[in-house]
Length: 315
Figure 1 (spheres, rainbow, N blue to C red):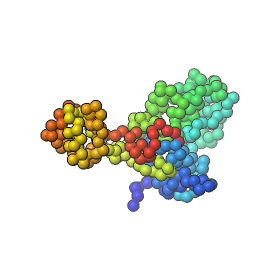
Figure 2 (figure 1 turned 120 degrees about the vertical axis):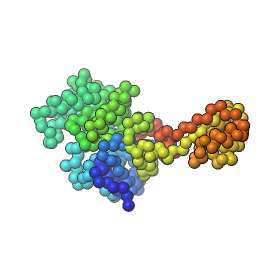
Figure 3 (figure 1 turned 90 degrees about the vertical axis):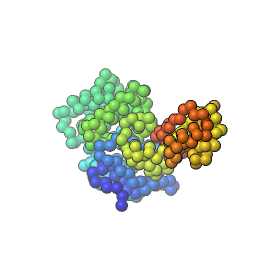
C-alpha cells in the first residue's frame, strides 16, 4: 500500500507523458507533495520536471495516469482549483509595450474570483513584494531578464495562494536577487502556502526546502524529506597521517572502499563501518593519524550519484 495522499497539495499516480515518435518524457510518476512543504523538484535537463509541471497546470495533457492539486483532479477541476495556484513556468509572457504595472492589472482583471475595486492595491503589493515598485511604470520590453522573472513572481502572488509552483524562479537573477527570492519563498511558506520549486541550484534547495524529489530520465529516483533523501548519501572519511600506505591497508581490510591517497591523506567511503572502530584500528596499526574527518555527502553529491549528471543544469 502506498503512502496516504489525504490532504496532499500535489498527488500524481502513474502520470505519464509520451510524445509523438515514442519519446517518454515522464514515466509512471508517483509524486506526493505534503501540504505546507517547500518541495525541491530536481533533475538534469530533459529529466521531465517541466513537462510534469505543465501537466499539473493543465498546459499539457497526460498520456496516462492521474494528477490532483489541492485534493482536486486536474484537468477536470482546473477551473475551480487553479485560482488557488500561483505559477511561474518557463519564463513569464507579458505584453512588451505595457508597463509592469499595466501587465499585472490586465492579469488581475482576468481573474473573476477577485474584486475589481481592490485591483490597484493588489498590484502595488505584489510589485512591492518582489522589489519592482520603482520600475512599475517602465515598459516590459526594457526590463532585464531578472526584472522579467520578478514580474512573473509578482503575477503568481497577485492574490493569496494555497499552492505556488515555480519553475527555475531565480533564472537571470544576480546573487542579491537570488537571496531575495529565497527569502520570499520562506515568507510564502510561513504563511501556509505549499511551494513546489523546480531548480538546478542545489545549494538553494538545501537552504529552503523541507522535501525533495529527484527526477532522472522521466522517473522519480528519490523522494522524501531532505533529511531522508540525504541520509542515503555515503559518509566519507578523510585521514591525514604519517603512513598513508598503512592506512590504506587497514581501511581495505575493514572493507572501507574505494580508497584514494594524495599528499599524506587517504579518502574513502565509510559505508556501514563504525567510525570509532576504524579510527582505533588506524591508531593500533601505527598509521600516525594526525586528523580524522567524517563528511556526509551533500545533496549535490547524491544528485550526481542518482542521475549521473552534473548539478549546474537546467530542465
